[in-house]
Length: 221
Image (cartoon, rainbow, N blue to C red):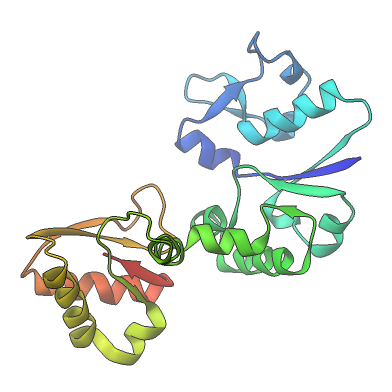
């Protein structure tokens, strides 16, 4: 069997301080990790991201499995189809959106659409990365969710700030939100573009919407 693992950027994991040491006694399979998959952490210890550790463990423990470590710029339909299955463990569409340039993101997205041996598959990635999609899904099945107002970028471009603000304020009044609320983007992660508001902060809200709808697929309040 041949398993592909779509690798995240080691530099990104270093920033989050989410690396594991290749000399950890609990992970003997990491001792012979090729240097190209390693990075020095803040304490100057040679480490790897968790996805590399999992791939190295599979190779160390199963002699009938080959692991194909795939960096973001190496992702293409031909490469993915050469494997029996490909896994996204850390790197996914959301990570690509934030840490890579648009060309790498679009190439990755197109490969996901065309390949049918990737887990989680594209339709699921698309669903879980869009807060509006899964909140609407939960609401449809009468599951409890926090009060929310989703506005997508194409809607905003059509109706403008005034009507978008009115839509938000009507939702807040109808559902009795109170004075304070927060904004967060669709495709947001790790508090990126997260902002707190109080009712009446129109200039701040207008600036937030103008920037957010120009960069993200939508905003959720």
